Length: 130
Image 1 (cartoon, rainbow, N blue to C red):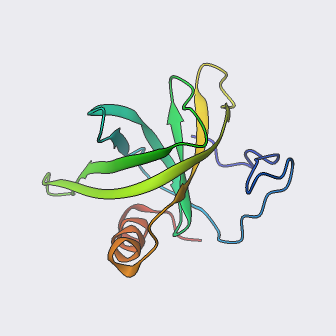
Image 2 (cartoon, rainbow, N blue to C red):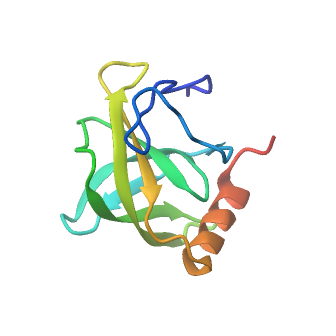
């Protein structure tokens, strides 16, 4: 698992080479599966997440500037199925450190407490602490 700097030239807000990320991303212990609900297919695996957005690792490039209805799926330590649904926009897509894979950055579209609290809980339960 890679924990160094990634996507230093990520495109956000339409400005080339300007990275406006102000919220620290949390790398998770597990690569959780993320599904495209509308296509009912695995889109990729969650690499990191924060209350503003997330990054996925995928085998194919994910089109940018598109809205997605996503579902994060995982099992609790007891084995019970867990899920979290949210909407996000794909902002950028680049080759991963391993060029066989692709990293895609998403911004959450709906940032009300109904979605932020479950995301914070996922980060707390499954994420690395500083």
